[in-house]
Picture 1 (tube, rainbow, N blue to C red):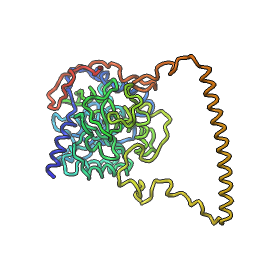
Picture 2 (tube, rainbow, N blue to C red):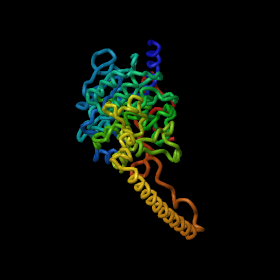
Picture 3 (tube, one colour):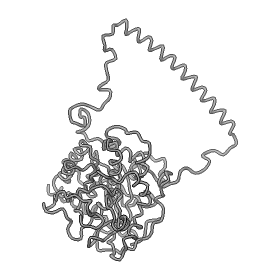
Picture 4 (tube, one colour):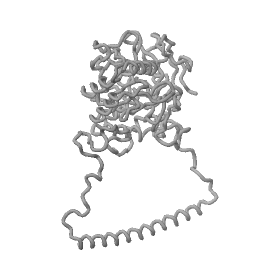
Amino acid sequence: MAFTRTLRSAGGVVLAGALVFAAAPAASADQTREDQWPLEAFDAASIWKISKGKGVTVAVIDSGVNAGHVDLKGNVVEGKDFIDGGSTAPEAGDDHGTAMASIIAAHGHGPGGADGVMGLAPDAKILDIRDDGHHDDGFAESIRYAVDHGASVINVSSGGAVKVDAEAEAVAYALKKNVVVVAASGNEGSEVRYPAGHPGAIAVGAVKNNTEIWEGSNHGPQLLLSGPGTFIVSAGGKDNAAYRSGTGTSDASAFVAAAAALLRAKFPDLTAGQIVNRLTKSAGLPSSEKGASLPDEHYGYGFIQPLAALTRDISAGPTYGPLKVPESLQAGQSDDGQGTTDDPSASAPDATAGGMSDDEQAAADRKQVIALGVIGVVGLLVLALVVFLIVKLARRNKGNRGGPGGPGGPSGWGGDGQPQYGRTPHQPQYQQGGNPYQQQSQAPGRWPNQ
């Protein structure tokens, strides 16, 4: 079992160490807000007219959250420390959990909350759970704790390479209890890590501000969605008013969790799977991926578009939506575990029930055959008419140039009136810090506009 712990530890360090730069204290609060490019890309101002995540609790299972940060005060609920049994407050210099919490539910500060960082779901509450997954059962205990203590969304921006059965069962438990589990896929450019890879979880990849996949984003058939993951400005640093910039699937996962919180507040009657259904049905793809078979191993169903997810006319869909259903929730199990099934054919009445005699049944069968024959003839006539009209229209337009009259909807956010991911954000004035897990692929202080 110690060997399993070691592997999870190595994977968790790489994943949780997605931060690129530490913030310089000279950065002004209003400049910090301008540097939050995903808020502009998402058209957060329009989103917040519809939902701010009010009434929703998001569990952040991470390194602990600094509840005293000026942009998080009042939005953090004390949970439990699964590392050493003490306070959930992070250790000095470890601001990963604080950053994730702020991406989700920071409220800014100053007049009108106009300064500092703003989370995508600023009215949501954060349930602070401190855990690194370095246990024989991975994050199993902390996931179950989150479910049992009021969270309707869980974010785990960490993980490891080893699949742990107890952790998978905890994800299934969350789904059974109608809780959305969001997890980062990993930052090595390899296979999806766990708990993201467990059935029932949303595995999240990271895209750059031009909507193209970030090169370090892990990928595979489990990947379901992607979100902003490069040069993400968030709360964190040496004091209660410090900020920093990070890159990785950790940040992308937090954005997806925040989007789920917005939807849970707007559509409280939808199941966890139906919330995910709205996210996948409204997701976008870069122009280079148009026509790709979905879910794609790098993008999943695409990058999240929260405004579209909140406003589009999308049917609720099945209970579990596009999620891969854990075996324990499949055949013979309903959401309440009472041994019923969601298969509609299981409850269909017997066609011969009701005491019908053989002669009556034969007569009914003859009527059905006649009715089907009439329907078939009518269908053929309609089909012939449609073909005739198509041929006539094609002849009328002969000589015109083929294909659409112009380019399709804009790339980026899919033509819903939302800003393109590809807009060049203001360059943040942050300095490179001493984080041992820095990604060095891009120069400090520059947005990935390539």
